Image (tube, rainbow, N blue to C red; front, side):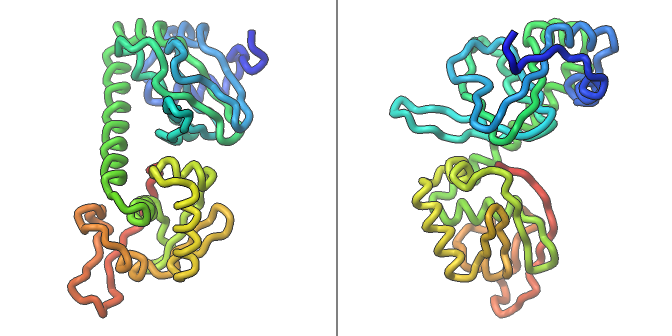
Length: 266
């Protein structure tokens, strides 16, 4: 057995698994059978869990930490597809398709503790458990909506506007006209997620800092004046969430309506 793989005996981890919506409808006997083929795994940053092209025999639940899913092009370039965080699963949808290999690689960004599940064992459970089927359908529905949000972001062609749209989607508002974002991934990874070249992203950040639009301190990005930030973009209002749209009818007014939303869209 691989040094990173351990039998699941910790009751707290078992309870954590059972609380997850993909497993909460399983009766104790079903869960016990599923855990017999499961394994606890630990990975350090930059260690790969799976590789693009590997046989897709298992799916994973993140107990602690976060990782990136990425694709490697024929030219050797890596593109970050998604950042998966604690409490989330990945690769479970593949058990329903005829695709027998992983379409992406998965690499730890921080120290990660995962539970690896045998896809075929879970699929057998689903055949006899309608509630579990509904749970996984709900999970896929959420992911589809997230994918649509990503398409919307990437449809904005200007690199600065893609970054501004990311800020709008993820900022935590400390008060009406001020907000902050705490990044838990490297900026180069965020750049890849937004389809921006690292050098371009670095120049963009430096310019926005110089212009006073943002303040950057390590992974902390502060927006001192949200009205000014939005006013300096040419993102169509259609790209803004309805409860974040700004009233530009009176450009001299500083009473733009901004609601607080905390969303992880990377």
